[in-house]
Amino acid sequence: MDYLDADLNIWRFQARLTSRLLKWALANLLGGVLLAGMPHPFWRGFGIQSAGWGLINALIAFWGSRSARKRQASLPDAYTPERQALETRGLKRLLWLNCILDILYVLGGLSLVRSREKSDRAGRGHGWGILVQGSYLFFFDLVHVLLISRRAK
Image 1 (cartoon, rainbow, N blue to C red):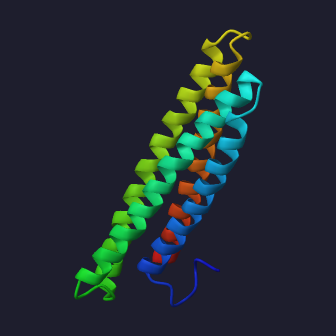
Image 2 (image 1 turned 120 degrees about the vertical axis):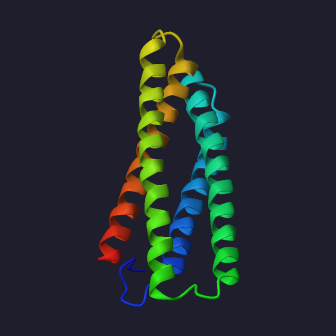
C-alpha cells in the first residue's frame, strides 16, 4: 500500500489516511478499555484517556471518510487535475492545522504530568495518556502531510 502510487488520487489517499486513523482508534479503544479496568490508578487514568481519544478518533475517521466519499460523488470534476490540486491543498492545510493542535495536546499532557504530585497517579496517568496520543497524532499528521506534499510535486 504505497501512498505514492502513480495512479493514486486524492480520494484514495484520503481513504487510506482515514482507514489508518480508524485502525489506531480501534486499538486505542480496546487497549483503553482494558487499561481502564486495571487496579492501578495510573493505568486507569491512562486507559481512560486512550479509550476517549480512540472514540474521538474513530468518529473523526468515520466522518472524514464519509464526507470525502460524499464530496467526491457530488463533484462532476472530481478527477480533473485542477480539482485534485484543490482538494490536495485543502487536505494539506487541514493536516498542518492538526499538527499545530497535536503540539498543543502534547504540551497540555506534559503540563498535566508536571503539575501533579507523584502521589496523584491517576492524574499523571491522564497526563501521560494525553501526551502519548498527541505525540502519535503529531507524527501521523506530519507523515501524511509530507507524503501528500511529495505526491503533489
